[in-house]
Image 1 (cartoon, rainbow, N blue to C red):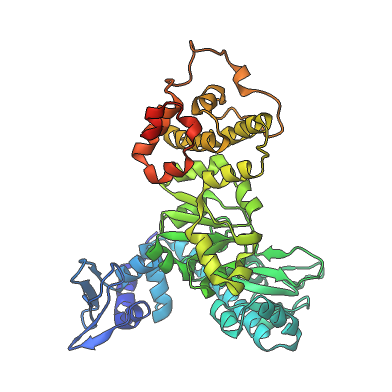
Image 2: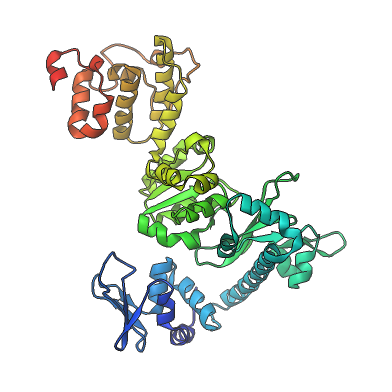
Length: 487
């Protein structure tokens, strides 16, 4: 798909490059040019220059340069067409595409987006001023959200009536239905899809409002959350709530925080961590991961412990390897909800993110911390359960590092774990199992799993390469040889 060259030129000419760049950079006029801090690299002196007459920018520090379309592409992480389309909306230019079919498709998309935008404005006005939204306003205040938060995130209220939105925005029935705003009832009348719910607008990465997540009021029967149905503009498996607002800080921090709820995202923003997003009524998908990886390498799961642990381990490890991604899990004190913690103790919230554990470490700690270790039998069962978790990881180096940690925590010889562990992918015994995984294969030195170093030699090897991490795990039981113990 392409945009006609004349229209691209029209967008460039109609766009005020200084105004667009000023949305991201504080500029000041110096002679005939504008200067500010470069948004593409860290600096203290303003080496970023904008020429309003030629409609170009250039950074004397890092060499970044281009026109207004290039700037929007780089800052907003959009493709060329997306950047031109965003600027066309700002400048009032109607775009024509090289493929006539695409012209029709874009016209249809524009109609759907316009309908959703009208609905969003109407919901928002209802929350701010309508008497029937008083309970919703009270609930939001109880969650620590004030008027500024409501305005910044465009939160709204869908009243109880069956067709109040349909009568208010007056869009064609086919557009109303296709945009996910409602359906046609048995009397052939448009009926609202969302009723009696607090409305959270959901945007695509470019900032277009494409759908909604609606939360029912506490104590009312019905699904807690209801999301827009998938449509030509809305796909829940590819969208992340808040990403259009969070992406700049995600890039800056090289870290994205993934939450379960929309109010959790807002809580992180209020706590000074505006790099949080949330899935839209679905589990984390590969499309979500690919999208986030274009902004950052580290992803922190800010779920409750049970939800975080339920993420399919094999899937997470595949994503880590395929996309060069680091997945960590934040553990919140007392199992607190991130939105509540943001309100009561934002410093604790920040600490939980900073101290987030690697995904495997989190799962391993959950197994060992919940296992009784007071008898040899209990420790053996804990070892089986722990090794089943460790062996799910595809990297033999990572597996060996965690094997050593399990051995130290359970006061076992690492070789005992090597010689009884199941093969990767083969599962393992849980804490309550009485089976011995070593019984599933022939025993004895004639068929070792790996070269049999002593436990002391193994520990010393790890100590040389990673002394800070390994030293706290060492135990004198690993060093029966006095010479090794003094090393």
